[in-house]
Image (cartoon, rainbow, N blue to C red; front, side, top):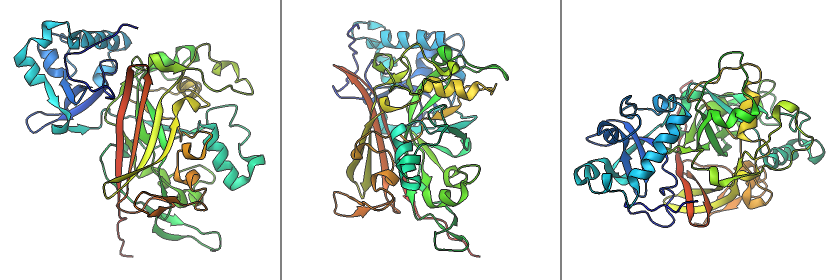
Length: 419
């Protein structure tokens, strides 16, 4: 791979190298929401480059929009052309932007001075359950190791349709949900604020190419339909879910909020980190069999932030996922479901084999039997009011680093009800 160097200052361990160039939506006191890419500590305003005639989209402007959907809709050829053009413009040996002092000063803005927004309009949201380790851990708690995995789990990517309207960008506070809770010794449920609020360490991928109603997506073409990935915290109210999920699955326990990172890392930026998925046994049915490696080596971590002091509680990797994004998308569309540009598909909780690689508090504390101890000496079974959960992720090979930044959310107290 060609070594690339940019004239923009980028620290060695920055998530946002010239090899990355993730897309996001930002605004400032003087700028309305528009598309930018992250490079080092700065945001490059693509609407200004577009207006200056420097981008492939200059004759069909899309970067003044407040979501990425119009750009994504232009298709993979335009994505690739734009990425190549941006890398060329940011190259240390290219004077076109480097020596245009007025445009540089105007278009390169410090990330610390901007506000980030939800990067996409999400028509639909689907959440999967594709980590074997996570599914096995949860199954062991409630059904024992002999029956931990349901019979369909190794045959298809299990998922459900979620609520798109409550997807929020990193930094948005999450109000503790309330709902029906039934304890094992009670005859009937009570209405209460959630007592077992959890996070779920996930990634999400964004559909970049639609398919017509009734038209499936072949697994060998599925990666062509994926624009990029984000970090995803799919908040979960465990006690509400335990009562409501039979027989149709999660409802209010999952609809109150799902947080995503503001920067969308393109699949092209992650190509260097593509790797095999775990061996699938039994061999999937023919429509799910892959001929290429479709998993990715992405390091992930979760931290508690309590009053500004962080404690890292989990470190894992996306490469452990049993079902790949390509298989998830193919299975989703095999019935003829028409996927739309901007649809968000969550991986499901990502856990590894070791205790400190589990992707939820339900697993990390083994359902409250093994509380966590934080740096400040406090213990946690589940999330308390005022706690913030921070997730980070990056891929690295030698000197090439492609990161996601972070997704962060603080939990606020539940609403009070007068009835």
